[in-house]
Picture 1: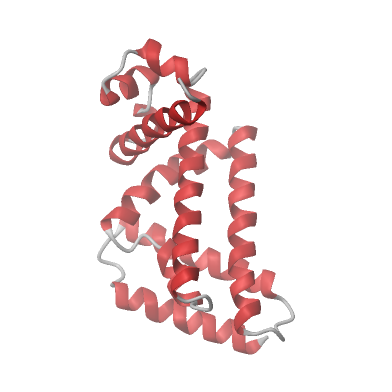
Picture 2 (picture 1 turned 90 degrees about the vertical axis):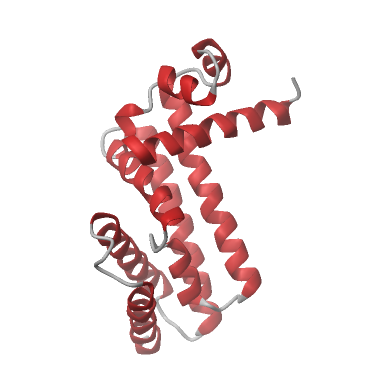
Length: 190
């Protein structure tokens, strides 16, 4: 099998794992259960992934790829639309909520697992750099875009957690308004 086919099969299995985690939590994502969901034997799944750890790391990296693609689409549409980019990271619709649910389990695992912690640190660093780059484009005179980016990311994460646990707590318009207000406050103050 060609390397690209091998990687494509790995991505497909990882996507099934993400769906399972979103529906039932990280504990449900056993190799046996994922194999059953994808319609393969456990032997086939373990051909592509040495163990559950490797499979879950691939799933986490699929999130990073999803986030990168959303960032690139947002930047292609409107390079300085910081509010739009931050909204693209929020759990404002069912697709976003489905992608956020597995992240919670993976973040929990990162608290105890150095490999997951390294992946999470990499994602945070990349995301902060992306936000800071937009801040710099909008306001080249901004003295501290990294601090602004950290605060905005924390806001997005906090709102998203609230949306996951209480979907009625924020409307999309309220989320957009809060983010726009915070962007204006933070960026114009610097």
